[in-house]
Length: 57
Image (tube, rainbow, N blue to C red; front, side, top):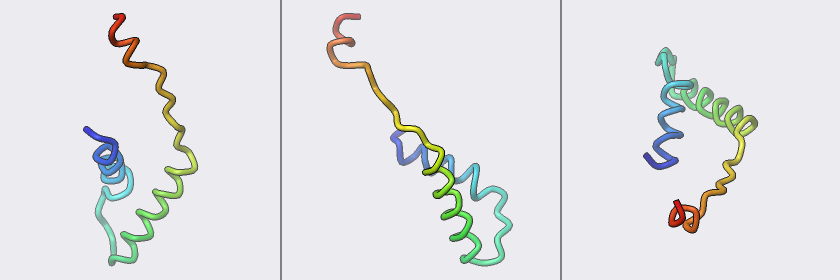
């Protein structure tokens, strides 16, 4: 899975379930609130594994 698919999977599970929205404005508000929370708490991924590491193992 690529990173976009993972992100949308998280949005589906955490923000859009259950789907008890009154209108599209509620959906928009929930998604934007989730996005703000996600961006505030997300940590960057520091990859230390290189091609050289792959060849030596």
